[in-house]
Image (cartoon, rainbow, N blue to C red; front, side, top):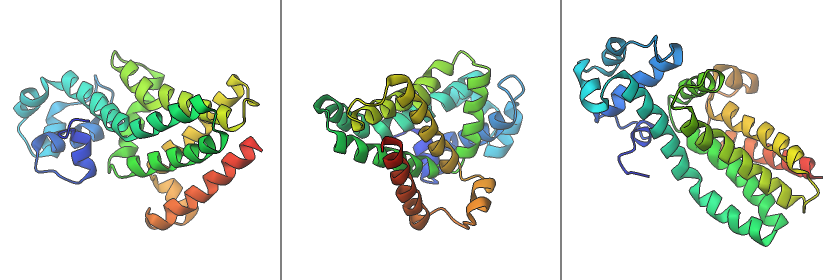
Length: 221
């Protein structure tokens, strides 16, 4: 991933770069409004910049929306590449134990990575709108944030089951498990209230790791 990836700056709370502030404001705006309904003046006000800065850095509202999709996808692609590389080798060797272990690490690792991004709940809303009413930028987000990880998980589950799980069944399981990533990485007030968590740190990640491990074992049991 480009070291200047803007989502990584937001995750690191590095707001010195005006592009990070603009994108943070844009994500909040696009989460509430459609691309057509979003207003650059509101985004600029949230970012503390002149509206002209949006055109300067992103070429306008559509360019900014495209940047949100592309930068989010690139941030995630970089995070999951080591899992994909390891998984391809495990699947090729038909290593059932390795596949089960990697599936758990992949799920927990994705939750950790996305939960670092303060605006992840707003990003989730944007992606849900894209899924329901796709724009011309949908394909990029769909592949990076949905189809590739779900298909990857499905292959790991098939490998872990030693081929006992049929493709369609493993896809259903994989989609259900991927839903946990979206749910817990967003850290919504509803999730935190349900668990009575006041924070989302090492202890809470440990609980998820243990629970997801048990879910995987029962799924394959």
